[in-house]
Amino acid sequence: MSPQVQMEFTTADAIVQELVRAGVTTAFGIVSIHNMPIYDAILREGSIHLVCSRGESGAVNMADGYARATGKLGVVITSTGTGAGNAAGSLIEAWAAGIPVLHLTGEVASPYLGTGRGYIHECKDQLSMMEGACKKAIRLRKPEQTAAVVRQAIQDALAAPSGPVSLEIPIDFQSAIIPNHPLEEVRFAAQTNHLALDLPKEIVSKITNARRPVIWAGGGVISADASQEVKQLAELIGAAVITSQSGKGSIPEDHAQCIGHFAAYELTKKLLKDSDLLISIGVRFRGNETANWKVTVPKEHIAIDADWQAINRNYEVTNGLVGDAKQILHTIIQELSKKELQPDPAYLDEVQSVRQELRAALRATLGPYEQILDGMRKVLPRDTILVRDVTVQANVWGSRLFEIYEPRTSIHASGGGIGQGLPTAIGAQVAFKDRQVVLMAGDGGFMVNVGEMATAAQENLPLIVVLFDDAGYGVLRNIQDAAYGRQVAVDLLSPDFVLLGQSMGFESTRIGSPDEFVSALENAVGTKKPTMIVVDMEAVGPMAKPFGGPPGAADAFKPRKLKGGIE
Image (tube, rainbow, N blue to C red; front, side, top):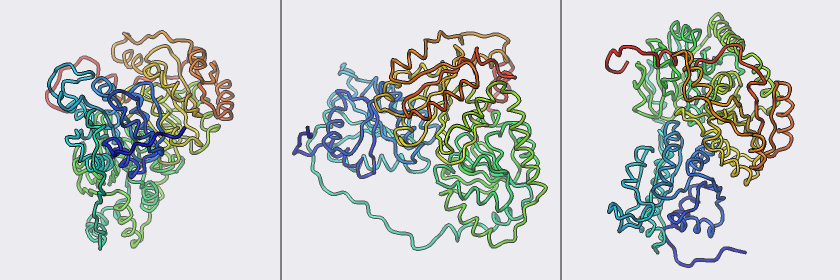
């Protein structure tokens, strides 16, 4: 039955019209009495696919995962008050990772805003709550301004530094009849390439003269689509390439100059200490990736970032370049191409040696999980999108030894919150139904959003969940052991995950050995159906060396006297 035609043009229609104009083809969320007019407008327009999540938190993660995998805007629609509050935690993750997400939420009817009269779904100060969780929060204050406000919200979400923007629309406004007049933005094309003219000669000179350069590539490389430029620059000057978690895929991880996500490891710290130039590109230098900023960087530090406030935020910068990383790198490469550069062969050998030693040392700690790692990389296609929840196996080797070859094929929780992996993976798989998406999760985090398995089944997604079941919070267990020699509140009762998965529409199996895992994974890739492989960690056996958390994690929790101030 074709959707019923509505002759009047409303605020909800204007919202959908702007989404379509922005190229949105998929939206995630839960229908409610406080967003129903928007849902109805999407139905009548007909071109946007609605993915119905089981919770607002999961819906935001799905929009987030969709945006990370595609580089496009993620769109999520939630209800008011509690619904918006449920979304807040996942919006914080999108903010931490700098992901462009448009969060459309309802509000109580405009006459009741701020009155505290008990209008259904009322929140004390929803706008402030959303402001705290997002890059920006906006309230539509006049229905006739809908097109302009939505368009601005989309631009704000996408503008560097990108991030989630929340737009709340009072429920009485959503059905308001408004004019539908054209709204056009006037843009003037730049006549000259100011970037090429403005590049300081000092920067070219420093790069040319560096004998032991290091590139630190972050998520800004991925956002700017600058991975080819990073690889080209690294090869041109003979630089070692460190990546942050978010920067994985900036350079293929089988490249001889790729150190990878090992910044806080001793061999990498020494390499940095002995280097004569650091070029950081779109890096936040997060505390958990720098041992809370105990990693030292060389005196000469050229930072490239789209965010003015990123310069000198965590490490001193001798030269800052603010703008689009792809354009800046292209200009630098053009200038360097005019020089006769001769990378030091001895330094390149040292970089490759550090790369190999780091991987060998970490592999030696894995025990039976080394075979699982190798099986995953052998069986899975090269362009597999690997999503990692916060769990021991993801932290130890999923984020470091499972090689990533392309940008936007590595997704993790930047803010460190558990349980967001499943819906994030669903969002990525919705974006690419013909690609393989694999989730690495632990049983503790998986249960947080376990209901979203039904969403994956309803969308008939070929998602593979690799669930490491150790009946508890494994990362916290190990940190507690290392810090205190005892454990508290980390043991959990695991359900029968195979039965649970089957009841949710997943083909599910439990394995107790690496050989069984590889066989199960081969079958999962072949079925192209929602699949869950439960890894019985007790049966598989322990790692050769327990994981005590990120470098320095246990020491941070031991009793100590505070020095005062921020270290």
